Image (cartoon, rainbow, N blue to C red; front, side):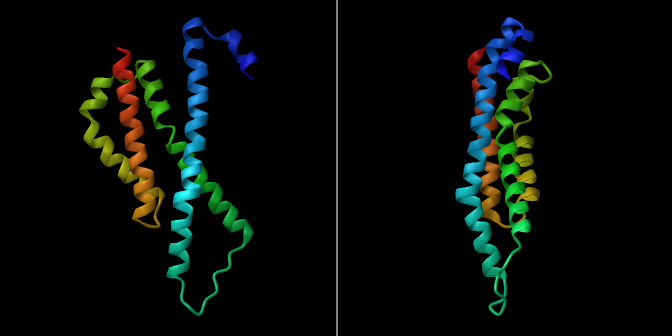
Length: 147
């Protein structure tokens, strides 16, 4: 795919394209990995402890796989915040000064979004919201160092 897209890009776009592609893939799989190793065990533990003792927890494989897919996609996509922030700044849609001024609202927004996405408990909320916020901050630091 890269050899197909590469001739259509300008020289300055080629400089950013490959690092953005590699970075977004790494961040996406990092989100999936953290969801699998940290969030999924806590969610399953929560579901098993909430069920009554007389009920044996048995899920249909379709429901379980659908749940896993949604969980992995949510965590993978939310870990792309750094790439999105960088692209918005690079395209001139927003500047770093505006993002720094709106930092408080963005932090609250990260926790608000994480609250609605992970409705199972505080551990999964924290595991999603704090990296979203930190990736946003890293995106701002990276852009400030470049200027």
